[in-house]
Length: 371
Image (cartoon, rainbow, N blue to C red; front, side, top):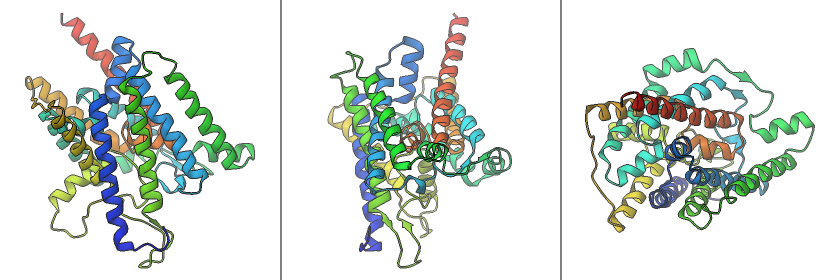
């Protein structure tokens, strides 16, 4: 954003992220947008409606993100998802761990924040465990294990790991043409599949999918265009304002919860500031709370017994650990990352689904065995 006042850009990004997340939280509460629930519905009941809502969000995000790239508004090469270093083991292990965790914790990272806004005390405990485990994996004792044992297992690619760049190099074609063709095929193909269901059409699920997808696209534009300076007058280098990664970001709900906890613990440290990720976490809770209060659906809910508490504690810890390894959650990788068409995001997405589905199968087996 040339000619902008650098001092004002951080505020634009932070408040913009809060507003987008507020909409996300309210709509997700209204439409019961839940990726864990989507997998559960398919595995346990054969109901694809909530899965179609998730896939619709992915389709909208893919098409919108590709449109922004083709219009020259953003560059996905400047995200954490498209680096040439494909840490495939980290994506796979982290995704599986996150999938197991979100099943035990009654919802993914975003659903945890949405449920907090609705009055769920169990989700508050999950948030604390998720944030603590994520911070430990980012900078603490689990981070030492991650750096020594998981991250080094990788493949160094000759180009960025987004599929358009990889295919363009392999085919000797122009990336823009490959991007348009691939994004169009995937996005429109998913939309055709989603709306093939008559039951899905005309439901709240359509609203949820479209809004979540658009929020991801708007987040890219906010941090990658409005909050971007090609040359920061203070450093003479390019600058993405108010992002924890120092790169372009959109919605993700694991590392931001860790950074939020860090901000609360180190509030007097002036180097710790409000960021896109932290604001999006707060906005999600606020939006969900506003919807719950407006519809009088706010209800306090606690644990039914000790086993329920243990499951949610373990679930939160696994989500924090797995989400950092996978570099995102069901939103952060499953929609935001996939919208960049990064290979690692697809690995993480399928690993999360596999981990959740396997855990649900085990839970069902244990339940039937105990009868």
